[in-house]
Length: 367
Ligand SMILES: Cc1ncc(COP(=O)(O)O)c(C=O)c1O
Image (cartoon, rainbow, N blue to C red; front, side, top):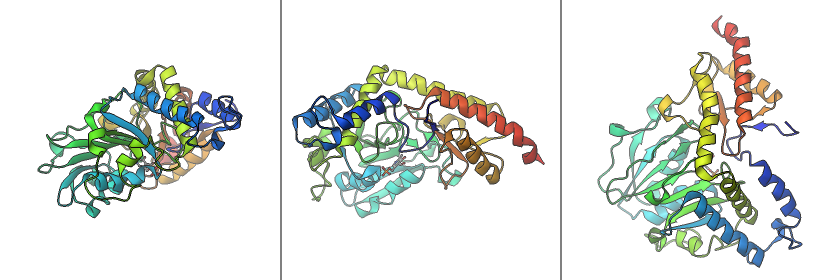
């Protein structure tokens, strides 16, 4: 370990070391232009190249077909909560949403501004600890699209397979916290969006992958900044883009390719998550939040026997260089976020700490 700690933050989150070191240099002088990346115009030749490379590398990483446009916007994943129905849902029609946690609820609450929302599956009744599937899912009659949150960052649950949308409907996914953590078939989606600050780069930029035919015209007149087509046709430069975020996402795509692509990411992520989950399954001091079959490879949620012990765990872990393990306030306990760039040794160190903490406090908890 250097002067850096193991950063379990849910986002903004840890980034690949080699990307950060290159960025340090590029802030001063990128590609021998004599100008740092923070100072380049978004219209100059250097940023032209960065834009085109970022798009091409993003396409290569995800094997995104030509039927889909790749672009980026500001406003975070949260802006997509209204942009999706604004662009796609005609008045009087229905969109189906999976209710699997806070981020899904944020989207659901914006839909009535534009059309009807049908909850096609919900885990609300059990504290969002599972993913609805099989006969827990009831689609409406002829939904325009079906939206789901592919990984529930707060709850620690993940769709390991995307839902099958009914005929005539397209899939929309908020992939903010598991995009590019494993291979996925992007041709199945009408729209995918992801805030970059977990698996792709810094905060301030949101990646969009959209079927071109769906974004040609919004279903209603919209302000120009809200219509997807304007951002897609202008290569994410309809207005001044978050240039540093676009550059850094591009560096992360290059890093993923150099590491062996999404198959390599998947293998590594599976191995890292298993280190923590295997330990959780082997003991009875900590209680995991998510049911076993739906647990996330990106965010691991668990609790100590009491809230007081949760607080002590977080405090003592922090002192040992295991940083930002406090769970979201709506779930409590702990959350270990272990995105693509998070090192395996960090998972090993966490389990060592969990073992020692449990050994020390099991008696108090049982007393
Ligand atoms: C799955 C998911 N969706 C949406 C958001 C909201 O993202 P933003 O803060 O970029 O709007 C988050 C943030 O953590 C998230 O994890």
